[in-house]
Length: 306
View: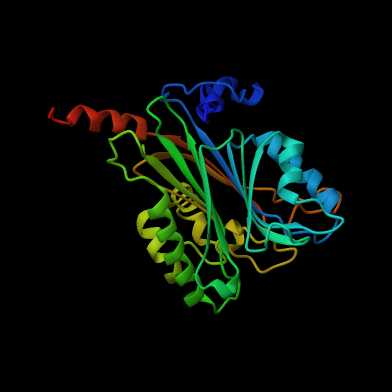
């Protein structure tokens, strides 16, 4: 891949005004001021007035200019273009859509990753148990000249309130997928350079719930790290739209604390316009600063010559 995520992360002062980088841009060296913006949103498929909801979502993406977007409940059917592909084209992003439905099916439903740059690597996993038809999408993006990267995962877990055991099994399946696709921190042979992990999506569960315990043991809940007191108050930190659903914070961005400094986490798309809401969920926007490039340099310095 000749394009890199760093092309849009370099020099944050000019970030909001800059056009998306050219796919021909070469990798740039790591910058201590580089930042990665992440947005996660459950689209609520085609419920309500999708054209008007779409306009709100497009506006917010254009305003926030996130580098990585995780979308859930993405639908395509006769008469409705794939929603992720539609949003990507409208906002100038690249898209990776995943579904358990076969590619030739007229109706497909699943998750998607949108990014400002093409991906070096991408994959998907059908999460166990397979009869729940849940997936995780994966894409890897390089952000510096040492080929350090972001391993980004987008998922949507089982939705029944009493389905904790199913979600726990899906988390185990997701972590196995992460272990198989995200290179370890100490990779030094140049074939699988380090990637720092970000996991985003609709988990249908509180971040500190028993079923998410294995995920939370490895990664940090960005919103709770940024707002430790507020995060405990469902009414004030809900990502479910109270106009449609009981308040609960179930949409999360988890990040590797060894690879990123957290800069910001806030709830977005949480106001209606002319009576129209963007979704039955609110969005979550997180900004992170990658630090693994410096750690990788340190690791290389510490190697003894053969």
